Image (cartoon, rainbow, N blue to C red; front, side):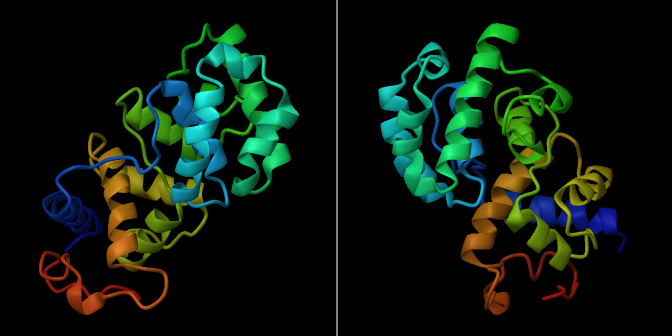
Length: 211
């Protein structure tokens, strides 16, 4: 079985186990996903969702974020860690989004990553969830699990992304990554993975994961 064939089996298997692929970050407006993605750096999605509930209520529009006092934003997002740096980049990104991009999130990775604090992970998240374009969100779950599945030998996010783009169908990448997050929390955990209960075990034609 080739790596590409195994990748397709993994994509199909996770789709069967988790029919509804959904981003774990809660947002209602496209730019809010950009902000939540920035806050998720070195922070759990669960904590981000708690913080953004208050943050998005206080700043209900892109304009209000662009005009926000950075110190006030920092106080709200303090639980997410690196709050001073994150607050500064959030306000700067919103200003640039408003004044340079007319309030619309860019439609390329290259442009998205020019926004303050936005790396390839959040840029890919936006590409897939907002623009519904090919994307590969290489977060810790994706890197860990695709490595165990032998789909990549790399550990650097951008290199993992490059490897996966060669073998994952372009229209499946975004949903595949969302499903990896759920799968990584339920079964393929960083420590003590539940290999005996793994729902992919029978679907991978006997492939032994590199755990």
